[in-house]
Length: 193
Image (tube, rainbow, N blue to C red):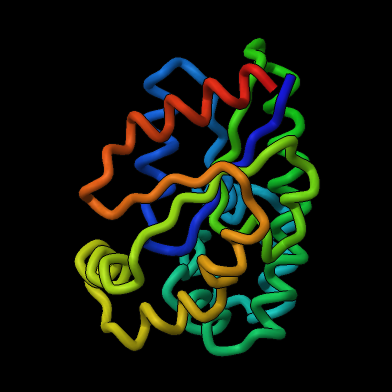
């Protein structure tokens, strides 16, 4: 069984590519979504976040995502502490999920595979990338936030150029280049290698 990571900067379109791969019949684990679920349900994560931010980080037993985002996107050391708390638990959850799969290729969609060092645990990485201006427009529209907030988030991740150097499988999501053709070619190469 090959473990394949799907990553890309915020607004690049990695979720769209993951949905295409899922529609092709391959299992896809969404680390970002499951991390959100685990912050609500995992006692170790909850305890750690309360230690870092105080009881108010959870309101009515629900994570205050806005407060968390504000804190971690403006303080790199806090972001590193939160990542060190959450990502090992998500990685373990992914490993358990993989055991339940019966496909030759399994995929993990994650925004920060390189930033956390988890890319080393995969047989290959697919990078989804897009022009910066297009990514900014997508995030402003999706999250109803300012360009300044988007740039803060983008600056907290490796640049596309850094990720590009570390990957062989790449999908350009510029709303002009057909995605399916690119994805099919990558899946074929991964199946044959």
